[in-house]
Image (cartoon, rainbow, N blue to C red; front, side, top):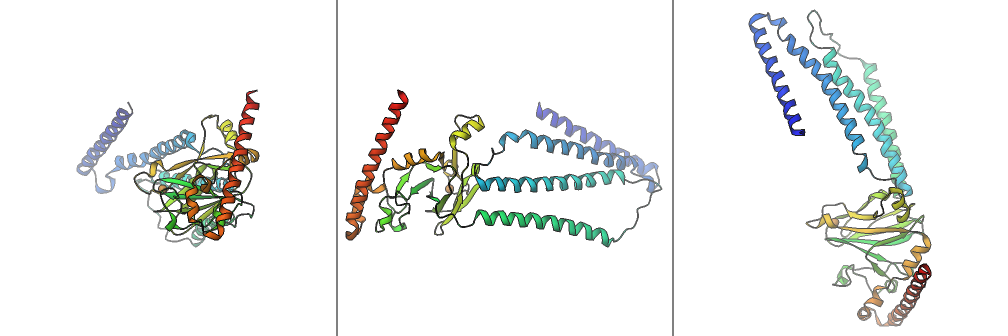
Length: 362
Ligand SMILES: [Cu+2]
C-alpha cells in the first residue's frame, strides 16, 4: 500500500512535469520571449510551499513517532546535565532550522517571476550582515562554553571514596575486575595474560591478591563509581547509555570515567514498567566480527545489597590457587592469608544468603 502511494505520487509529479514542459514548448511558439514560462514559474513557485508543508509535517511526525526509541530518564547525576544541554541545543537549532527553511521555501513563491516586476539590485547592507553574524556568534559561544563546562566537570578527578571497577575490552567481550577488600586494584601486565588470567593480573603486587573477576558489573546506587578502562587488542568503547556514559577503551592507553548512579535496577524496572529491564555496557566501537554481541549486564544495587554481593565474591587467587606460584617468595605468606580470609568471608556471605532466603521463605 505504502509503495503504491509513493508510486502514485511519483507518477503525479511526472505528469505535472510533462504538462509544464508542453506548456513551455507552446509558449516558445506563441509568445514573445519575455512572456514565456509563466505557468511553469507559477507551478514551481507553488511547489515550494507545498514541499515545505509536507516536509515539516514529516519532520514532526518522525520526531513524535520515534519517541518510544528515546532513552529513559538519565540514571546518573551528570547525565541529567548532558540531557539538559542536548535538549537546549536541540530547541535552538530546531527554531533556526524551521525559520531558515520557512524563508527558503516561501521566498521563491512570493518573489516568483511577474510581468511588470523588476528585481531590486541590493548589493550590501552592513547592519544586516552584522546582526546575522553577531547573534549566531553569541548563541554558539554560549552553547560551546556551557558544553565545555559540563564536559570538564564530567571528566574532573574522581572523588577519593569512589568504588573502583576495572573494565577491560577484548574481542569480543568485556572483562571486569574488582579490587577486593583492600579496595585497590593490583597491577596488571600484558605479559601475564593467559587462558585463565585473561586481564593479566600481576601477582607480584600484593594488592592483586584479593582482586576478583565478575561476570556482571555490580555497583551501589548514589555512590561515585570510577571505571578504569583499558583494551587488550583493538579499540573498543564502553557505552552505558542509561547513565549517558561513553568512553573509548584504547590498547596501551588506559582511560577512565566516573559517575554517580541515581536509580537502582529495581527502581528502573518499576519506572519503565518493564520487569525484564537491565542496564548494560555495550561496545560502541566497531571492533570486528563479533562486535554486535559485545555487551555485559550492569546491576545497580542499594548499598547493603551491594555489600552482600561484594562479600560473596571469590578472589581470583582463591579460585585458582595454582597462581600462587606467580607470587614472589617473600609475599607467599601474605597471599595464602588473603586466600584464607577470602574463603572465610565468602562462606559467611553464602551462609547469610542461605539464612536470608530461609527467613524469606518462612
Ligand atoms: Cu568492542
